[in-house]
Length: 441
Ligand code: AMP
Ligand code: GLY
Image 1: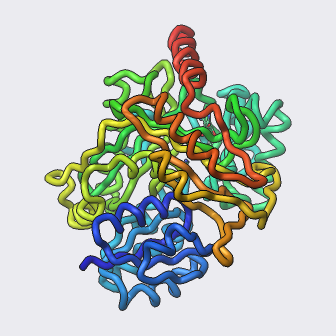
Image 2: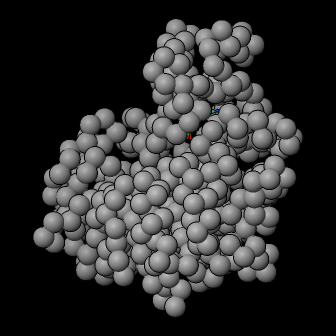
């Protein structure tokens, strides 16, 4: 029997654990909160900080043959490297390869030096003079990001979070002086278009693509409010999105493949899930960022409709045989919505009870994934992060969204969710926006 360590305790890892459990894998999980969905599917869990990599390795070494690392923070600490040294195969990149996510400066430099398409104007700055120089050339239509990890909350966009040149300089100064995300920044041209996610399995050389997904980062309906880790996402039966052409999709695939090739050429072959966040502009897809892991919520969209055995895909990733083990996905649309604590995005209500009728959710034909919660005596309590996610799926997007909503009616407490995600009106808005962007070319 295959024995696998999964690191992480969010809804993304619940989806990973469920997919591996379905294949009969014996599971061992390290997570900082006791995720009840994961707990039930595991042989053993260790409740511990996921970035304490020495403790994770020590616990895992006599228990498993393979590891799947969910979040980025342990990757940055070199967890994959340590596990590999101890003879454990890993789905997840080494510290050096994970820099594709953990250093936005490295990512941009790699794309430049290998002439990978999808590049944008940017500068890596370590002081205010360099920021000012970039503004001289580019004007104020920019985005400022700390180069390191900030939990998805570091990017500030001109016109939204930054309203003047002074705002840009003040935020930059803040990064330099307070050491946020490494104390250095990348300033980039601001792109116009629709964002989409392309996730790929990578075996160091080959990639295998997953269905496209669109996430919704803003906390409130109509894409307003603060940026979050992601409030929900959808995917379509044809594994495309309604505003993208086949040619544009192919272009995005080519960008990911060339990035994987570049990493191998740099001596950092990438084994794991590579997540490309793209902006579809009038000039085609441009790279916003890469993540060295599954997206959360996007993992739930794709793993819920995966046809192939996920454990076989993991084996192909570590063996380097993805070219002959192409995973397949069912032709279904999916809608995933997150339930989050009241105040999430600003100041979450922590430790409030959430009522979840698991049976009723199952009867609606939807799937439930627990995220950052604590279970005490069979009752579920919020933390400051996202609480749980529900996925509806069907032949078409409409019924998938309805199934998701029906399931959400069986969750209650001081929580909220975005009802607009996956609804026809919201999709139409995205199609019209893209039409507008193309016209202004
Ligand atoms: P990131 O932390 O790089 O994922 O950025 C977070 C969010 O900021 C993205 O999902 C976009 O909505 C926005 N963003 C980041 N970079 C750009 C850019 N160059 N142009 C426009 N929007 C951006
Ligand atoms: N859904 C965005 C992320 O996982 O970073």
